[in-house]
Image (cartoon, rainbow, N blue to C red; front, side, top):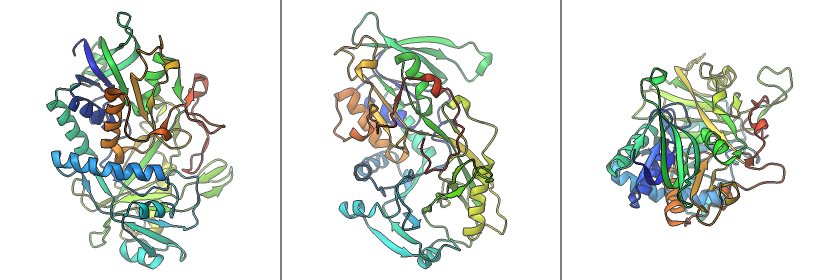
Length: 451
């Protein structure tokens, strides 16, 4: 490490790598700090695939998705294909209402029409003919949309890492940031202090680091509060889902050609229900086809919910994959997926951390001046934060936005919906009562349940 940088990025997942890449392209000297190893499976970017999709109920999200498309194209011209454009089939109850994290089934249609994006409406029988689903209710319908596909997560991470290397970004793993504080010798700069370990783990004494930075990007996902609280005396009111996914073997003769998402109202249960305390069990399911970079004849199927829901990533259960979520998904596969066998079991399963705030949207904003030590015009707009939301499909765009915020002082994209100071009257993003944040959430988590 050098002693001083134009930009320090805290968090080495896809958003952090994209931010470092864009800042380095703009001529900045950049340091990226990752507390674990690069390409780890402990955060939000684990597993092999994520959705690239343009089907959004919210007008502003649909607009951002369209703006992200040419940025993906540009990145792929540089590094090769990162997406397999399989298309996306959304199907289910046409009356599924608002309240879930993925909008509604029919809500995207006005946005698809506005942006001249192709889609086809399907009947229940057409859905079951095109994908190996069975036993769907008669009244169900589908939207088949072509401008969607599967993201190759492993390649995306490694290609962004390689591009950062080529541009001279200093990339440090096992680097845990403990505190960001004002540089006492320069009223417009910051110091970033922490511990630098190694692959030897706890057997090696970590070295302390304390480096200077003009601008800072915090892209630490579920770990964002580990930086904000000790540094700025505030945090975010986060609900962190331990999302479970599973891979099922499908008969090779059965075609499973595209991504899909099922919209269906939650199943209500009482306190004696096997799946939950008073609340609901999610019937939102999604899946991916077999992809060339993954195991053949295995499809990923998961419930879009989490039984295990925590407030801090240190509370996760690394040795326990939620049996409720696994069984909920298994029953769906057993009842509705052809080619998986009479009593299907997943070949393997895993988890990732999905970080949420109250409205399931991003946090993408500068830290307000009132929370910055020694606040003043010199330190305004010097620290930007991204966390929460379902971001993989926006990686190139968010990297560009973070660069514009830190290097240019403003962004050309509309991020007003992602301000960290937003509130709906009952909920807010920013939290200063840390006692609440230290409690493990005990309520049941269906994907349409809100705190």
